[in-house]
Image (tube, rainbow, N blue to C red):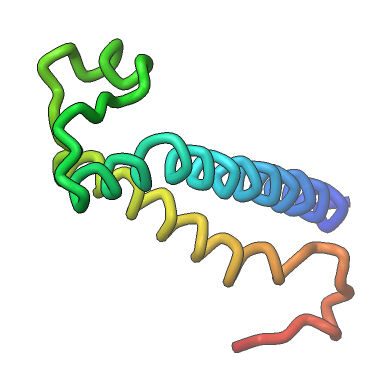
Length: 104
């Protein structure tokens, strides 16, 4: 009975990890497309007329002119955690029997 409960918790946790990892990938892609790449392109090209998306000003205020290390840190942290999740957690899915699990 305990084994069934632990297995159920493992399955639920693994499914949540998969869902959140996919959402993180979508979020990272969206932010790169809408915010980071256009900002970087404008900085490289010297385009002083570049404006952030409107949601950016609602969060950071109208005086925001640059992406700071805080913004890049959020992107890096999200990408790092998502990478670790995809690399180490998702492959260890709970649907393999115990004798087929790979131990590193």
